[in-house]
Image (cartoon, rainbow, N blue to C red; front, side, top):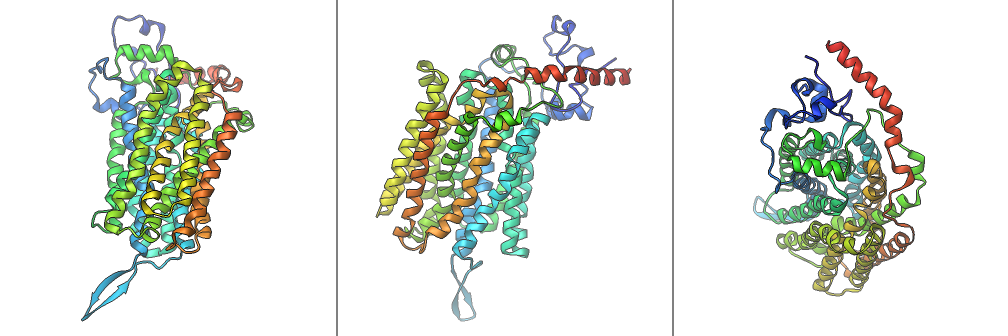
Amino acid sequence: MTGKLLGPGSGSKQKPSSDAQSSDDDERTMPEEKLLLNDPKNLQSKGWSGWYKCHQRLPNWMPQRFVICVLAHFGFIFLYIMRSNMSLAIVRMTTPYSLLETDHLISQVDYDWSMKEQGIILGSFFFGYILTQIPGGYLAVRYGGRMVFGLGVGFAAISSLLTPLFGHYLGFYGFVLARALCGICEGVTYPAIHAMWSHWAPPKERTTLVSGAFAGAYLGAAISFTASSRDASWEWLFLSAGLYSFIWTLLWFTWGNEYPEIDEVISEYELNYLTETVGAQQYTQNPSIPWMKILLSYRVWAICVCHFAANWGFYTILTELPTFMRHALHFHEGSLGNIAALPFLGMGITAAFGGYLVDNTLLRCLNVTYTRKVTIALTFLAQMMFFFYAGKATEGYEFMICICGALFFGGLSWAGFGANHLDIAPDYASILLGITNTAGTIPGIISPIVTGYLVENKEELASWSPVFLLSGYVYLVAGIYYIVFGTGERQDWADANEAVKLNSERKQSKINDVESASD
């Protein structure tokens, strides 16, 4: 018997033959066409799910694309727990505490770092994170989003588990190294999940699925802040995050699949629906990518500017909120985590439901371009106003209201630019997100450093005012730029069909070679 392979690599697959398609059997392939599950090449594309899943199809009311959305949602929860735990741990690590020694109390601190040193540690994650954005997008096209996303989370979990060890033995430089390694691993995840959505997300559900998955990031930040309120050591923040993330990785590789066509439990109804709306997948082993056209496209740069602005305000709050609340607002450490979690909880909720709201309101009345522009205009304007008010606030409760409001609308903004990559170039969405998230990572690097220079005295509320005013101006400029240059129309260079045609003969030749060898 000759077994048909998906292709030489995980990024390509062989379409069923006409004989298999005309069969009365409802399986995806005939016995002659079955995938060789014991072949390592097929394990790359199909995954371990072939060994564990039963062949019972999901009912029509349980779409597999939403199962993947839920899995991705929890994946981003754990990614952001690992990302944000340093900003929480550093408060405990640098806060003096009393220690009983013989007959008297002494004041002690684990690490006596300056604000500038703390800024470098908080920014070191993003030094690594920015390096793998564009490579992550390419790897997702080359090897599949499922593989890249899962391995990114898995290796980030390992780096989180090693962080306390690096810190204890290497001190300041150990934390910088560990956080940079974690950033390198997490950097591939955002582009990789967009590669998944290019196969699984119908146009009318793109915003819902993309925002629903990304919402996990902000809920993860909220969970991380809440967990920090418990009487556990700062080491436990890293160890617990790494452990849970590693468990999630096993679940992802068990239940996630790259393509609908090779998923064993997808219903026939959903498979037909995705084939009609998304199209049959024809990806090649060595895709041809129009790099220059992508990099020179002002439509892509419009998304870059939005991504930069959205992350400037978000990363500023994510990295500096615990320090600001502890020293400027004088919150007790025991209650700090629960209160700091509120803005991120609100952001997660609005991100989760904002996509559904946009898909079922604006998108029904407006075309895609106007839908994206209206969403960005409203959300960025609101965020600008809240950050301006935060810069003028004189009371702690005023500041918290402003920050909650800013992040509330920040969750909605992802319904504007978060799915825009799939609008203008679905075949290259992972690469586009890698590019725009590179721009979006820059604030994570420079915002903590800029804050360290702007804040002269972290104990004074007025010293923090320039930080929030600067964020407001960033949203103002970005909103205007996107309204002028943004679009929701598919670009001329975005059609990968030509690349498929150019590589089809080479792909078929390789498949024929494999078949000949098996004979």
